[in-house]
Length: 375
Image (cartoon, rainbow, N blue to C red):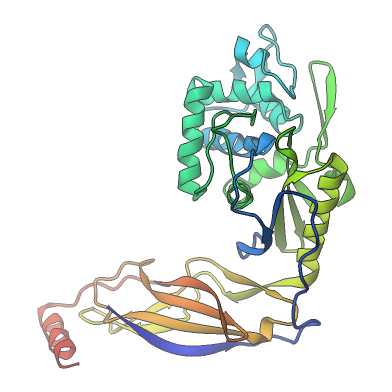
């Protein structure tokens, strides 16, 4: 198929205060990334694709699979989970489950998220998949589905293992997926500041929950090899930003540096809405169809993140696949939408059919075949 330019559109907005974003801040850590969840656009990053030990950030994937099991009715929050000896003896941070003490799925989730309990992770993994080893296979399968191309999981808790690693970019993908796919569970668990179980109260290690009212999660991690890690998420107005920091030097520093990244992203960038889900962006000519054209648009609300002052410098080019012949299904890709900022390519999005177009009758198809041959 030929690629046909439909037209050049200029997206206009009121001029903003600053034409260009400054350089990102200096960050104390081995690797880091800050991303605008609204546009799914990385604002700045350092060593984001290098593999590192994720420590307890692993528990984001464990939570994702547990929430999926709840949604699919494979688990229930009130179900009592037996505590195996392996879970009871799990080293590192713990919620202090005991084999002879009943514990529910809900309690284990709180122990995993708030107290970072490795014992809770093992118990949940066994409840979902029968064993932690089988659960690790599910983790890797889910990582592949989410596009986490440089990650491998060997256990549910994040304990050190040579075959257990991830990247800042992959962890950002995972964190965004957790917020997007399980918003109710995210809101329910990830902003809890402390949790008491078995007579022991433990504080959430994410200091930003106390320092910044806009922060509502997500997860800390630490091992000697990994250093101090934090995935932090902040929602201010309609925008949500997420930072990933790996290998910082202390609990206080990882909070301080994550706060720095979030503040920088909110201060110097805007999320610009280009089109709404289902909005007809353009009508495209259709051959051999019951209709002569099809309305095309985007599958979801389309946002881009731009430096403050850059919204009026956005341009959008629309392309269609040509010749476009029926039948066409609603949601079928029929072209592309390319966004430029100050004349430089920025992002590209699928252009999809907003309605179905059935095939024309025999004479209609024959006539358009002739038209295409002449053309």
